[in-house]
Length: 528
Image (cartoon, rainbow, N blue to C red; front, side, top):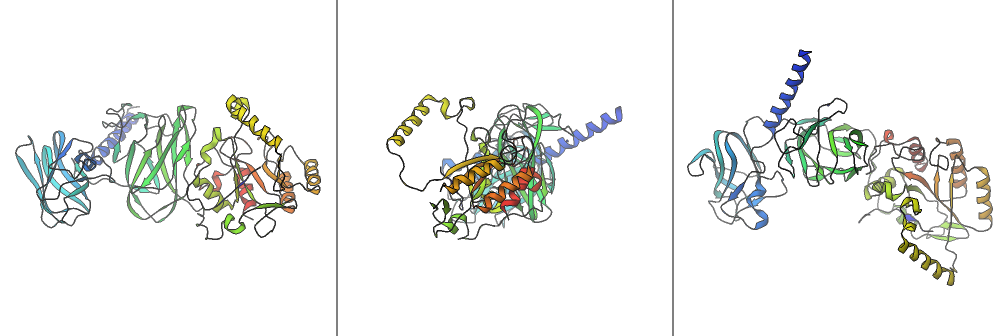
């Protein structure tokens, strides 16, 4: 039997009058999106020069502030964008890297031959510039007349708009419909859903509560960007409305280019319009204007909306060095039928077991385990895997089965001769009661060291309700004899023994409302 003690992880693991109202709402959303999306996004772009192939002109119009165009080291450099057809140009945003132009000219042309000046800057300071202009043309050009540094010029992004209205920021806390993005990246050229928006983002009508639209046909690497304004600095959780007919989905949320949620996962929901809500761990948001980017890490799922809500649940601080379970107890050993620490003092570990990793492995990750350690004050975790043939486990694989037999043969020829061994005990409060406790006590009296590697508040099926009185008797017994234990199970399955409510985040950060009756009971006992 082996156990894993927890430590600070470093390498982890929405009759005629009614019809008119609907039309007006749809028109409002469409025009808002048209204002929000730059007409330069992902359009053909070329430049006078590039520093290297990784800093090509196309990276100045890809909507990603982590990429950039950079020129060779001389004045007079330029970058041109083909808008595809003659369009009004009312507003330009420039996002400079450190190598910026102190003097530059914005120009427009109908034929790429004769250029008209839109704007001239003679005292540029770099950073982000938001410029109102008035012109029309197919081709847009920025000409750098004078560099501010000895380097060339480098732009993270150029955004050209057909309206001078700034992008309206979504107010947070609040709900954001997935289709109300300001920027996007999509792997297909067409809107496969054919609804609402002429961009290539795939939007369809939804039958979810409140109706409206959802984003679908999702592929890995696609993203949607939202301009937001946070009302007040504090801790928030993000709820996501998702659906999948096959396989579930994975995604994460970034704030100003930094991942704030970690990877969020969910299982298939039973259909493309069978919706469920999953919730992130608490995240810290600062007051002011920000960019939220919803990044898709897997395919084959739909998203309807996400909602940022304030949370009053405390977020556990990082553990003080020297106070983690491993730092406190050091190497463990078995001595006189008891688990003891490096000083020889009895130790009782308390923690959670996963459900079968084949089905609920997403709940075993660095973020969730850190939350168990810091918030629940767990000191041990168990990674469980079914091996029965009906579970597609190890024993069904003949090659693996032979490996098991080989190990047994070796052990039989050379049995263990040392005493650092513990014996496992499994029980479920609804099925196993005083008689099993008596047998455990008899085993301990004969010198056996016992570790409860699985127990549940339910009956032996994992269901049947929550048996709290008997669970309390078991915990009193385990505490009295300092027997370490692992509770079944860390998952969101619809059953009595699951610690989490269906749809709970796989990344930790669980509020009380996301814990099942079992989860609330176990957490409370661990934190005593």
